[in-house]
Length: 557
RNA sequence: GCCCUCGUAGCUCAGUGGAUAGAGCAUCCCCCUCCUAAGGGGAGGGUCACACGUUCGAUUCGUGUCGGGGGCACCA
Image (tube, helix red, strand yellow):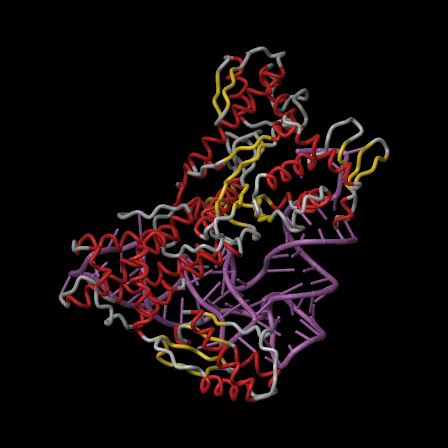
């Protein structure tokens, strides 16, 4: 429909321009949008406003000429000029109602498209260090990342979800030393406890399990503790496996599944870090200074050069990161989206610089990044800072256990990721209309309830006379339903899952208003079937949208 | 000091180069003999942080100032 109207407008614009001398039409950036208010029709264009300047004419006069020159169309019931020179289009009722049949015919596929053309995209998210349970910040990354993955899939991309473990750095040493200290019975507030050690209760659990020579399984690995306090290597591998197992449980509770888990340690053992370093040296973008090896990241927009290999021979953290991303490129991902906390934003320039230095024909702005800001958790009007298990932060699992998976996912994905987020536990727990999750789910459940009470042939709803659907509530609902595919497409191209959450809230609101104003199970058979058909389509779109958020769509509440 | 990001109603947040800047909560007033009131309708509440610029038009874009957060190590 949008393409159809755009074509009509382009034809009209050409006619007008010919009447007014020559003008470059290709650079004309007019928009055709859905107006905020239903009073302004189904679509509105600013074409006349855009043409005003080059044609040196009053926008209103141009708008009249455009309407004059507009080819006739069966879909358009009315056009009007409004405001400063907008042209509003009102579709005829039949064109508006047609979306119902489209939704009922395509079902779960309504809203999907093939923009991605089956190309490979990787979404890397969570990527927590195996040094503790996942906290609420990881939860935000998990909710946003998983929703992005679902959105990209719905847009025709071939999606891989990946989790990267930094299991090889100094933080793992800290973890190991912390467990050693606990095995020896050193208290966390004792002076001899490692200064940068981890102090959560879970360290105790690891120490106890290690001494008991337990076995832990984490996705692809199985490790049995030696129980020997002096066996640092066993302590390290056991601790990492133990915490990866914990994080697996956290992810399971959040109903998130990854396709690939990558280990930083594997980049070393497989020689990929060395390969990357050699390639960088060969590229000529490195130099030795003061006993260290430097990468000239300033060649690629960084504000200072960065050390690659320290004087002690170890690599700085971004080197394996570059090797990792070079590997992603080799694996054929034309697009990679890294979802991470905003506190890591300084890595973006370095990773991209490193990839450019490798001279592998990687685009300058590859990979994409989606950064999320901090989450603060509130309960009873006060900030919650501590968790028993982790000590210094609120764990994801605590949150899920307290407010449920659906509410947690919704709240963490429903905000722009670059805004700081306040997670109100009381609100997320509320089983009232205050809570947007229940508000949306309730709309779905209400429809299910009506359809069940009707108890007719639901499949037949795809072939009913819809001509009675023309009151204000129905018009608004039809417009909302027909804009769902654009919402899905935009949320993916903008990498902004929260826009989908907002859409669903609006759709639920439209449904509740309608529900309150009209009855569906009425004697007039034709009107009844038409209305049931409309709410049935609404139910489908609510379900499709909630699926993309990873939130359930209950039939009863 | 430099860089990134945010600043919109009392609170939590949407939104946009254009039409009267929206929603929920909170406050106040209405609506169940009726398909789930986990709902609906209405009222009040705004210098879109501030200033200057670009534009026919700026809350949106640019520059600067102020404020919150983050980043600026041979830490990760």
